[in-house]
Length: 357
Image 1 (tube, one colour):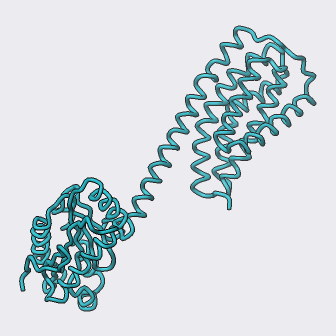
Image 2: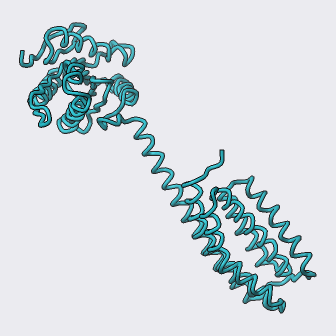
Image 3: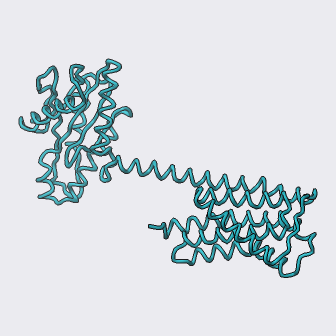
């Protein structure tokens, strides 16, 4: 499928800038090589048209085309064809010829790689053939000092401009890639890490704890009776509750802590380098703050949290066992009355901190 629409228009805008500059500098390069040959008036008009008017016409042609991407590739081939034509019109003057062909080759390979470079060379050869039919070229083996100086702006300014355009495009692509990666790892409703991204972070933390022989804790957080909230107050209210919990997590966790939405009404937190007792205090304080929130849209809505905590255990073979400990603690919190923090330590599920029960 050929790229169309926005991408094609973006390419047309980028090439409009480079073509306008390149052909203006090209005119400065070609004119001193052609004028001493006493060209006919039509050739002078053609040279002015190609160097001054063609960039604007090419842009409008591409912009108004239903397939701007294909239109720009056609315009680039026309550029290559006219470049070959001017090589013959200059009677193969060495320096202007080399500069003209190399600048066009650089442009073509930057746009379409080796394949388009070869297509552009074929167009240049065709342009030379057209020029050969119109002129009787005589090889001019020498380049005058004026012609040499006239080539310098094209040799210096155009590669700089093309490099800047390529840099901006690379920077924009890199930014888009980073944004897409962030979106692929983020839960759209809460802005926290999604299930897969958080589990990746858990694996990294598990490996770090094993390697550095340091502790830490993880928490699984469940919103009590969340289905009843959705059924009673509606899914909009449920979404507000989810966003409120994510906001509380962002406001009350350390920069080094990693929070995510594990799924549905379940959240998860990695607490690096935190003893279990301190993790219990932090999670119980978070539970207390969340249960004290009010909801203007639904004043009667009351929400609480059940939280399961598990400390890092060096005897575990993988991060899944660590997560399973937290899951067992969460299950115990939900089955023993909810609205509380339960922790899993030394293979036992212990009720370390109570909520408002």
